[in-house]
Picture 1 (cartoon, rainbow, N blue to C red):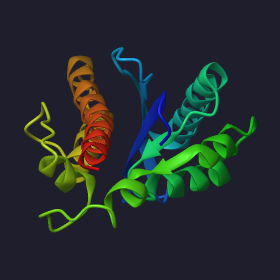
Picture 2: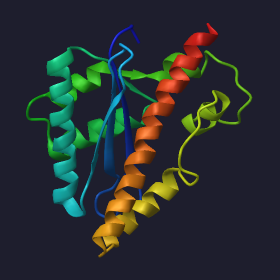
Picture 3: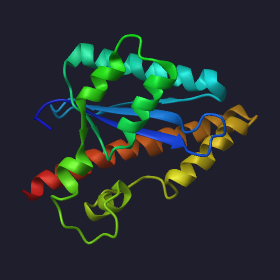
Picture 4: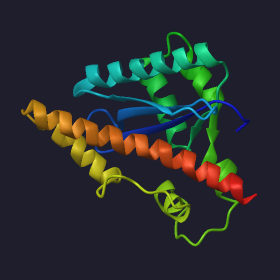
Length: 195
């Protein structure tokens, strides 16, 4: 993307959520102002059921709208087509009353397509982020992570009756998503440094 501020955008979803088709249970954004300041992370975890699903979508739209209003036409960097697919599905499911989803969709920048696949030849069996980030030297703080792990932790979060356990799981999920965003930033910088 052009130099300057960018937002790294990543969602976590449960493709086995009965009745919701695919439910995005975590919307994550990482703002990198491009000025050397610390990146700012924001994440929203959906509560159970349709109300929680809708509320998380609208919280994402509100946060995205504020970023666009504050900074302007900022690229929303994501990895592969999944975030675009989910945004379109959610705009159909719950609507886009202030046209923020339409703005974000026009600002999406797929780094897998534009900076990795077809641009780099790497010793990995998949060009998914988890494989490429290791090749680029990115280190995660959690020993357990991944999409299936995340779905399992989210279900544990919803089922837990212990508030302390819920807080702990929430922090694990947000850390995982934040590190997905940080991994994208690391891989993009690494890929650019190779040119």
